[in-house]
Image (tube, rainbow, N blue to C red; front, side, top):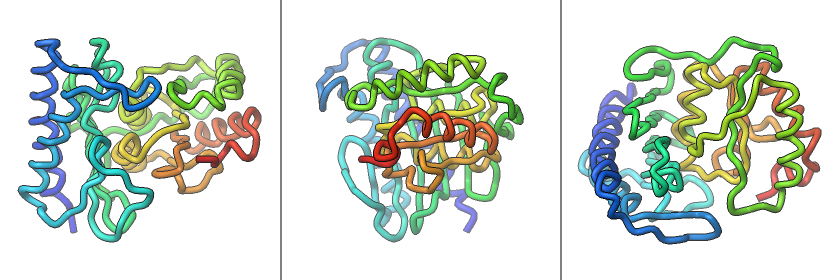
Length: 270
């Protein structure tokens, strides 16, 4: 199965959702609520998610949906599941900071098949289909070939609700400042992963993430020649809340750094 139709529908859904998000942004008329500590939701998130689900269901009525604002699962069911983040970077959106994305992925039998991330403000669209490569606005992309950490730019996300591991995180951050070209925190994990896929970042790491944050971007990295693991180097990154991504050498470097500053129990703790 080539998943061409699924990829087209994902792009249609993202385009329609982006138009809705831009309308809310231009009017600055959205409502903001708190789901938890520093965890925002706006009515733009809800409207975007509704449009994406409607568009997907029109073509694939029998497929399952895992979406940030409407479904919570602890594991993927068998068969086809669309994993959706209607606005990844809601805090950025709420403050008018121009990095927020739509992320749409299709997983089938617990494997990623289609991934799309659209950065709404710039209009950048990252896409991948399993076995077909990764693309930015239709042009082929690949991960960086830089292997020396001293020449690497690393993306990450700061803890915002679960601050239990923040001290270890800051010690790691300090070490990476010494051993890389620098770190960046744009505020959208989906976009961070795509920056790895197209070689802007050599690597990325974060904890506290959800499936909709990483389901699409991770496939795009893999199809761009990169590696995605959890903090222990295994494959439990979709629901495991801890992720490392990059080319082989930088991913290995980041895992070593993480193991230096985090206790063993912190590497996979939910």
